[in-house]
Amino acid sequence: MNKAQLIDAIAGESGLTKADAKKALDAFIKVTGSALKGGDRVALVGFGSFGVSERSARTGRNPQTGQEIQIPAKKVVKFKAGSELTDSIN
Image (cartoon, rainbow, N blue to C red):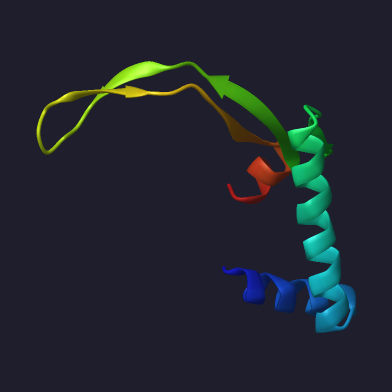
């Protein structure tokens, strides 16, 4: 499902117009990104939680040449599914 399909589904399920559903989805993405950037965790009970984790620097290998390369440390977004979401797909 891509973003346009998600907007259509949200509009159909909630009774919102597609324009309002797009605004709501864009606002959710913006607010979630801002919260994660600020170091907060975003938890939606039953759905899951978003958090930021740090990966340490490490040595990798170029698969074409076999040459070792240094991979710098970085922050990554992690998602952990909630129990209701997990149960709904089983």
